[in-house]
Length: 426
Image (cartoon, rainbow, N blue to C red; front, side, top):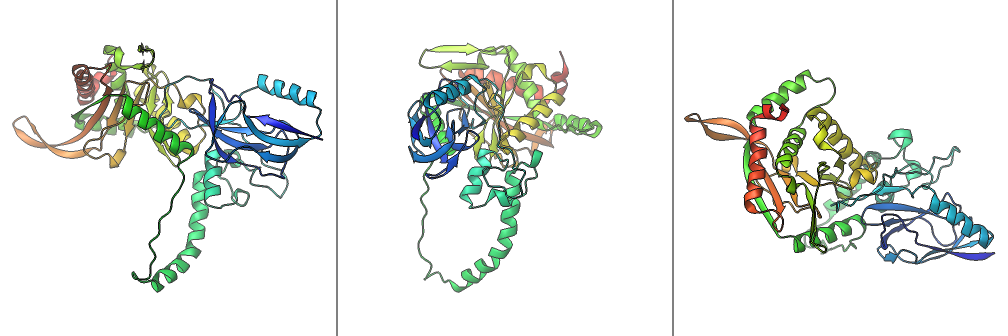
């Protein structure tokens, strides 16, 4: 028997380090090459790392939240395997497909990457199933662990029995009915004078820490200029209602029309569909429009990408926006679906307020923000008329985009949305 010291592997895209998110094994556990031992977080993805050999875990190097260098010690496994066989096995795995990932592109930096489908552990065929054997995304596993829920006791309603966040919610709802009576009784026996002052400190780790780091960097390094203008979408709403009445499956929201307007405006101002590298002082413009759709998920903000928006009509855009947003929310999106955006749309929907100041998703140079739609009195043809209006709040990297160009860009989008027939010309 000998102890094999497994190193943190190169998890792709040339990253030099990764954050240890969670250990999925403990000292004394028996592992096989099918055992997922840990989850680590890079700039691009949460990556599941598997053991390379059979054996017993004798050492764990690092605590959740630690940032480890690629090539540093990760885990010690006592094994009877021959050292030469171990090295050969590791070489074979390095030549195989990339490890399973669930991308965490909270505010994606626009970098490229090979598409990598999420790989999952198969559900055991026996009657006894452990939490490690059920099918669930890392985000779902992490949430279940934080809620002290045993995944093996939960029925998955997702594809192939996959456990989703909705399944966790369902279990919590069932449990809360029993807990609510106890909570009501406890609350009734407390008084304001006897209630203790309580606070809870939680380490900021994983996706939330990555979001905090990226937003801080974007805000401190990019001089933002935010331009806000209102858009009368009364005619667009009439057209949208008509198209939806005639539609079979796809339902059109405002977003695909905005995406189409964005494509047309970018064709006229291509320098806004760009990445800026401050270190090399290089602006890279793109012919293709890879549209990021900022999406709120249980794990924070993600930016799934609709690729080649310039080649899609509003129905196709609607389908793709719905598809990638759903994939981001349920944790099934691939790395390729959450990287490589060239410009981003962000929307708070009904919570959109009057105006926002969206933070740019670096290295992009612009972000388009949609605020909530409301009926406003608008002076039109000599009288006030009720019109459906929302504001666009759009931020630009002022190093690369002048105020005049930003205003021209937003005004063009406004004109296209207010005369929606123009969206279907050409």
